[in-house]
Length: 492
Image (cartoon, rainbow, N blue to C red):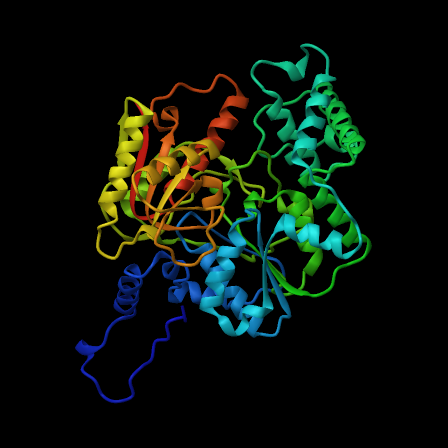
């Protein structure tokens, strides 16, 4: 959608007949609200347009809570940089299904420069770098799981890693997001590492046990002649450090908080600190993966080139308040290295109906109520089935929900197959697949009831606290995908 241009009449006109900037913006907003959600996802207000065209003398960051338009600013910034002769612009993110959606949105929004902007996931980018340089890799998730199972079995019975408070998945995440995600090569580095985003403190002896687990896992992978996804990033980073990759004039990273330190280092290496070279877009409150990083680890200094968006156009005030309550009191460490709680917004431009919290005795009753809710909202003015998103925490729940909708005669499209083109089918998928997307109506299906309990007992350990905070942030992400209406289904 082209950016709005405000003109001033040259002929004398009664001042009462002129619309203020606020009135023009409101009129534009009202018009786009009736269009398919895909048109809304490229809507840009004048303040956001100014930021999209802003020049920075080095790496920059655009931050803001959910609904403040970060992704759409990134899309328009990509168009601005492409028109300005920056060379090839790379737009990347962690979620592998999001780039094709954004590419199609961008193609309708700025067709004249669509060929100059490359949309790809970070892992696909890394694999392409290795392939083009003649390095063949075998990513086999089953082999990786078998390698970790073997390494875990070799730890011996009991011990610090066998605590009932922490499953093997916790330590697998430690390897993936902390050791490999931070590019740690030696135990000495790991021994002194500040484990950003991890609540459970480790003694030096525990770290030795973790490092031994990591080494056994790495050896088991090698015996299977396989690598995992974290290895692909590290291999591409090493290759680019040895032989720089030319061709990209600018890199824009959406949902930057979901990337690992090694991923950001790879992207930074493509453009360095050149003016308008690297733009990081994200919100620490929406981090849904364990571990983390700080920009200082990558050698990135923003030096005042951080911008905060603080006007929420997407959510109604009622939806935003409901979502904020889900993460009230939770804290996180931002990629700039500071502790944060919920980011406030200066203004919420819209109001609407209160979110619905529906509790049911059985999942069968829940699914019937979900189908009834879909039928109810599909008849609202300006609505189509494609404007409705049904989101779940797990793939299993997404499958069960799709089956319930199909059995009721409602067409569905899996978010794994959604490509950003308007569709007359309910969109169904996990919250992770919904990151970066928006829907007029969101139905959150099969939500864990403990996540909705305001008076839930305090976690018994820092590990449980970390897991609960991640789950709540994922719930927050899901709720804030909703533009006009929100329905949350759970068990009694």
